[in-house]
Length: 140
Image 1: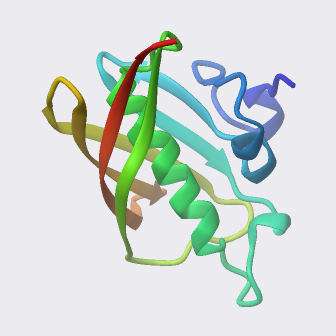
Image 2 (image 1 turned 180 degrees about the vertical axis):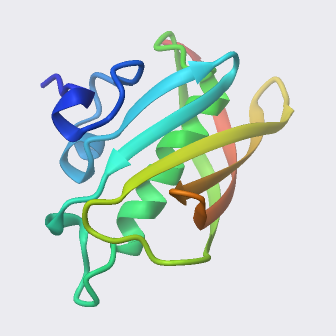
């Protein structure tokens, strides 16, 4: 299934990553590459919220993982990657209707492993910081 960013009030410079049904079910999430750094976007809906009426932490961690993996493979659909470890710190809540934006940076890229960091924001407010070790599986 293909999702359109404009349907979620997200800029059309973003695109949908095809082929991950779990991300589609949780999100949908969108991205564009700013050089080798991914920029991600997600519009929170009521179905993404917990009993406190804030975006569920699992949804935020999924967006962080999406952002981190895009950074590890450089946005290339030709390279497969998997998360080995992921650490998350919840800084502030996000709410229904918020546009949550992510950006990642590569700390170190090895032959088999990539060390990444990312930040998720709602407006100017940081909602989550994350770091991960991502394994490069090679070309698809």
